Image (cartoon, rainbow, N blue to C red; front, side, top):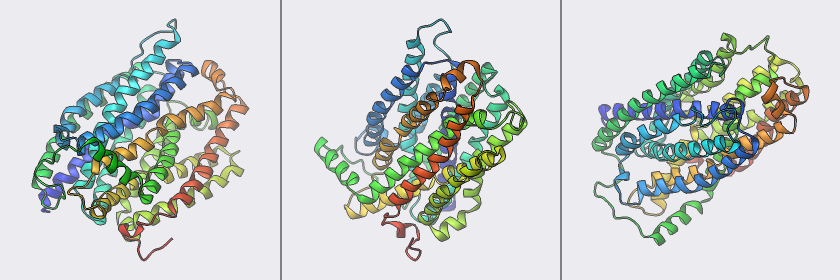
Length: 458
């Protein structure tokens, strides 16, 4: 591939990831807090929305994956997905931040609001996200190039996560909700521009690329029986199972961390140390969101030399070890340090799953003598498994918090020692329990040699 093609490829991945990043970071970080603390949705409707959200996830992810890879439609064009569906995704993002009712409205009004917003946003996020994952796989062909592309995607995430710092400062931790709404409108328009650039660049990249596996001619759509057989082949692979179930647990950790970072800080860190709206709390959120991406960007050579498998296994071990700081959790400064370590072991490792999925996609095409890789299908099936974590993690955490008086805290904003203790236990149990399960599951991953780990068994 010539240098121009490489630039098109990496810039397309950068702008696409940046657009997805600014929208999804705000979504994950704020939607639970906004609906619980600002819109005052009751627990029943919150749980109903999350349950229906899980069902919708089970439908839309594979649907868009199959349409983009085996459906024989215009949706096989990655560039058209970004150009046409990207703007719709950005507009659906806005549906979260404008309430449907007021303080005197029936509880079902905001419940319906959350359901509709989750359905619209997740549908188009799935469609565009699957296209980005397929573009990542198809525009890179070896581990070194994938790590290089990963660095660009992490640079995009590094730029996108700054929206948390800005949003916290502008809205004074949501106290000025109107300012937050205006900021979200600005982000929506910014993402539309970036999606348009991604669509144009990906079209140029795929037309110039000479090392892609996908043939030039359009393949006819597969029969329903062929799709079922194809799905069984993918899901029947032990390595694919290890990737997606480990990724599901990682998504639970990531979702819980992003959804409850602001709430946890309010509950376990005294205001005299990290006051709402202060530069100190903005700096803290900057560290927990930016540092993981900086570490990935600066350690490209380390990932290439040691391989993604060895790096991620090391992170699981660190997660388990860090949980033992619980014995010093009485100190707010230890809590701050732990939350920074936890953010590194979670968010800096999440992008590595793209490498594992890309490696599996190529291995599957070789093993099953496919005419082309099934990039969209593989990323869609991965999303099918991991996306329920976006619903499960908040429901589980809110359940335990409510048992310790969180509903009272929503009304009077007065934290009790019992509620703070519950939040601390949740923070430390997540890396201990889930990190241990990840370590056990991924230790049996057999394709570690695909990422340069043949000489580095673990």
